[in-house]
Length: 77
Image (cartoon, rainbow, N blue to C red):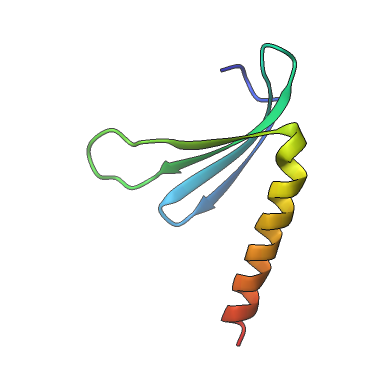
Protein backbone atom coordinates (compact mmCIF):
# COMPACT_ATOMS: atom_id res chain seq x y z
CA UNK A 1 0.00 0.00 0.00
CA UNK A 2 1.32 3.42 -0.93
CA UNK A 3 1.74 6.35 1.41
CA UNK A 4 -1.54 8.23 2.03
CA UNK A 5 -2.09 11.61 0.36
CA UNK A 6 -3.48 12.86 3.68
CA UNK A 7 -4.02 11.16 7.03
CA UNK A 8 -5.76 12.08 10.26
CA UNK A 9 -5.70 10.18 13.53
CA UNK A 10 -8.19 10.02 16.37
CA UNK A 11 -7.05 8.65 19.73
CA UNK A 12 -10.03 7.25 21.62
CA UNK A 13 -9.53 5.24 24.79
CA UNK A 14 -7.73 2.00 23.97
CA UNK A 15 -7.87 2.55 20.21
CA UNK A 16 -6.30 4.82 17.62
CA UNK A 17 -8.18 5.38 14.36
CA UNK A 18 -6.45 6.48 11.17
CA UNK A 19 -8.40 8.03 8.32
CA UNK A 20 -6.39 8.09 5.10
CA UNK A 21 -7.00 9.38 1.57
CA UNK A 22 -5.25 7.09 -0.88
CA UNK A 23 -4.89 6.41 -4.60
CA UNK A 24 -4.64 2.87 -5.97
CA UNK A 25 -2.41 1.69 -8.83
CA UNK A 26 -5.14 2.48 -11.35
CA UNK A 27 -5.37 6.08 -10.13
CA UNK A 28 -8.68 5.54 -8.32
CA UNK A 29 -9.13 7.51 -5.11
CA UNK A 30 -10.38 5.81 -1.97
CA UNK A 31 -10.60 6.26 1.78
CA UNK A 32 -9.23 3.80 4.31
CA UNK A 33 -10.13 3.74 7.99
CA UNK A 34 -7.90 1.71 10.31
CA UNK A 35 -8.44 0.80 13.95
CA UNK A 36 -5.43 -0.20 16.03
CA UNK A 37 -5.57 -1.26 19.70
CA UNK A 38 -3.21 0.64 21.99
CA UNK A 39 -3.37 -1.53 25.09
CA UNK A 40 -0.10 -2.72 26.57
CA UNK A 41 -0.95 -6.44 26.63
CA UNK A 42 1.61 -8.75 25.03
CA UNK A 43 1.07 -10.22 21.60
CA UNK A 44 0.40 -8.97 18.14
CA UNK A 45 -2.14 -6.19 17.76
CA UNK A 46 -4.62 -6.84 14.98
CA UNK A 47 -5.33 -3.88 12.73
CA UNK A 48 -8.87 -3.64 11.40
CA UNK A 49 -9.40 -1.79 8.13
CA UNK A 50 -12.24 -0.74 5.87
CA UNK A 51 -11.95 0.77 2.40
CA UNK A 52 -14.40 3.12 0.70
CA UNK A 53 -14.21 3.96 -2.99
CA UNK A 54 -14.61 7.61 -3.89
CA UNK A 55 -18.08 7.14 -5.38
CA UNK A 56 -19.38 5.76 -2.05
CA UNK A 57 -17.90 8.30 0.36
CA UNK A 58 -20.92 10.65 0.35
CA UNK A 59 -23.35 7.79 1.07
CA UNK A 60 -21.11 6.55 3.89
CA UNK A 61 -20.76 10.07 5.36
CA UNK A 62 -24.54 10.62 5.33
CA UNK A 63 -25.20 7.26 7.00
CA UNK A 64 -22.44 7.85 9.57
CA UNK A 65 -23.76 11.33 10.43
CA UNK A 66 -27.34 10.06 10.71
CA UNK A 67 -26.37 7.29 13.13
CA UNK A 68 -23.98 9.55 15.08
CA UNK A 69 -26.68 12.22 15.47
CA UNK A 70 -29.16 9.60 16.69
CA UNK A 71 -26.68 8.41 19.32
CA UNK A 72 -25.96 12.00 20.42
CA UNK A 73 -29.71 12.74 20.67
CA UNK A 74 -30.34 9.56 22.67
CA UNK A 75 -27.57 10.30 25.16
CA UNK A 76 -28.62 13.93 25.69
CA UNK A 77 -31.99 12.91 27.12
